[in-house]
Image (cartoon, rainbow over all chains, first blue to last red; front, side, top):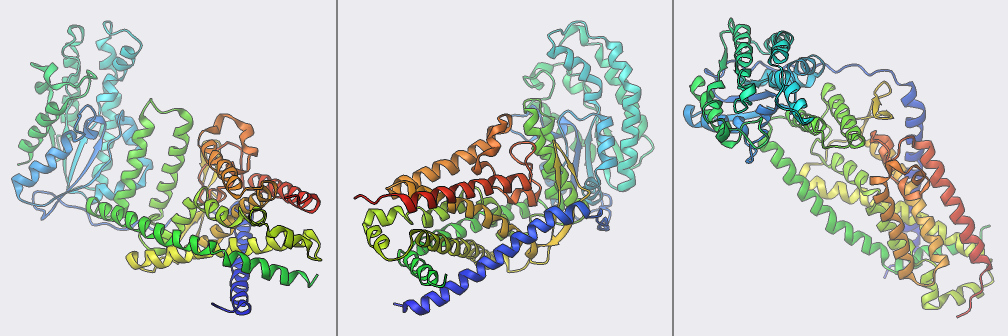
Length: 273
Length: 328
């Protein structure tokens, strides 16, 4: 048993000291919140850390993958949540025997080419994962072309979608894609860039079957944009979703299902190995 | 005035001998290793999946953007995510890791997330039986028949309580640091933490953002926690004066604190809720730039609300304690 007098001295001093520290902390916090914050100048932008470009994956020791784009890259519609990206990573490891690492999957559901372009322009954080990668997986454009159809379908109608309306979106979306590719190349000129083309998700709907022509037109545009880039490859997948579309399209009638993603992944592997 | 010091000494030693502080210490020694372990597992998962913290933050941003893209989310919830994205972006742009795994960061994060429930719980363990306990054991008669003015007795209890509140906060910080340091290493005090995010209805103003070293941030944070805890302590003292049973006074205060934290999560449409004390006790949010539960609240408002509640509770406590008859 500690004598009361001594206990009191120790307890009292410690507690008093604690109170003083906390009171000081409170005063300091108030000063910071009410005086410093309103007066603070924009702090200096820290220098962005220089990262060595990832180079080209064919020669690399380790395959480092950054995926970006829309819901296809995200894997929407796949009940296992894997999408095509995870399968590509696995199969690539098996085929090449090299370690494969996913740096980031930066895909955002519902993203359009114009939005991706804007993200690349404003979001400096994207530069880092793109620069580090030696393999970049990209899907974009589907939302630019099909959003009018999807919105109309949500409103109840489905039959009278104007194919011309879809075609009319192509030129501006293609401009955005060109700008996206250019920005990616400015950040990382050497990485292998895989752009997966579009398919016609509405092939099963007779009135929208001609939409395939619009999709083909888009894919041609994309081919032309990527054409001169020796490290870029366009993987066509339109044919995969025509004959037995119902088996490979998810219940939302728009995204591929698990089997659909498997087949996309297969195509990409074939293109890369 | 000097005759009050022995009273404070007496009350301080009484609380110590009730071994309440040992209970607090024990709770801390059980809980904090648990959280440290959880944090360690999380750091391991991140290290497995991401080469670099930058990729992890970027992924977090992308995941939030995906939630934002969903139409199923109500607009007022999106506000929080949008602000979170901007903050993470700010850290990324300035090449500072907001979740760096070290003991100082762990301490900061643990203290910040404890302010709404865990700290009030610790304080209630100390404060709830200060007066009602004397009634239950019958010692209140002895206490009040001494030739000392009643207000001095309550005042000395209040001072003793204040000392223990400070002690509890500092001890929590110290245990956090010492235990988590075993796993994460004892560094991180000089790491910059950003503060000064100003929230204006859904958007965030970063023009006032400035870095402070983490040790300074932790001290500021603890100061704000101390004010929240003192509010709880004074209210608990009042309840302990008003209610005869210690159990009843603990339950009353717990109910008030918990309902406050639930309200804070859902009350954005009920504006009057911002005058309830327990909606305002997350003072550290203002330092971190987390949006307040109800639009229009700021640090001055919250402190005023807490101040009014404290003042009211003090008036009621002293009024009742000096006047009431001791019957049983």
